[in-house]
Length: 311
Image (tube, rainbow, N blue to C red; front, side, top):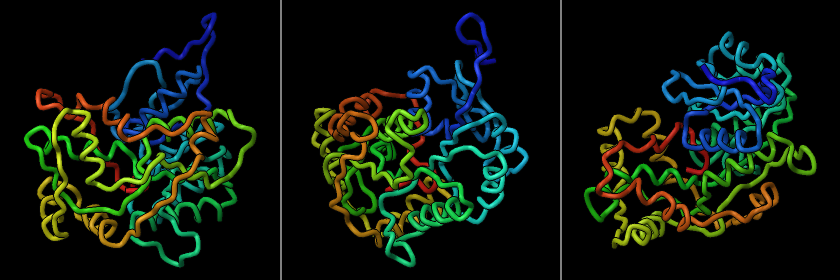
């Protein structure tokens, strides 16, 4: 059982619910909340990612009863929506309206606010979720993230056995360190900025990178000459299906690789929220080089959650 006592043995109360708490980003959000003395309540689907020192609840975002229990006593929710369809979120939104917490929603910088339909299914679900939360008058604080640096973990198996990373080429984006996104989220969740600005806050890294750029920077961190080789959509599809990824997710990723326009947008919104400039992908690669090392035998953390922003 987690330690839920505070100073002088008084019970500590969780007031912040973190969804997706066992994922790459969710873990970082929990770490930052804890570093500020907060006790987040962490929601996970199966309980396999539990760790000591925090309050864990097992439940599914699409289960109204589970969410009703998870939201009890909660003032603020950090919401990561993991599905490629916003329709199942209607029951969740009803529970949020009934419980009345502030909602901080993780979305995508790829959203085009002027477009009737978004470029691909992943971006569309984020646009639909934003619209659903606003229509319910929840006034979500929207954090739109660019491509997360942690997505590079999807290349671990290839880098451990060779110097070529192959996959579908993607639009160049301002890749952002998930630790910076977590820092921005924690600042909002804890109210550590001037006001509850609904946003959207556009969280980017300091430079625009393509897949080849990221692979080369990983090579520099590892002291190796790595290179990226783009493969055709059909081959990329068959490989991802062969890896066991769900067909619907694979099709969404292929659509993102072929339809999403490139973005040259770099913002200072990470620094506005955290007080620190966004870190570079080169720094992320150095900090995580051991995960890609040929001598590492432990399985890496999962690289992708469905509907990850900015992918």
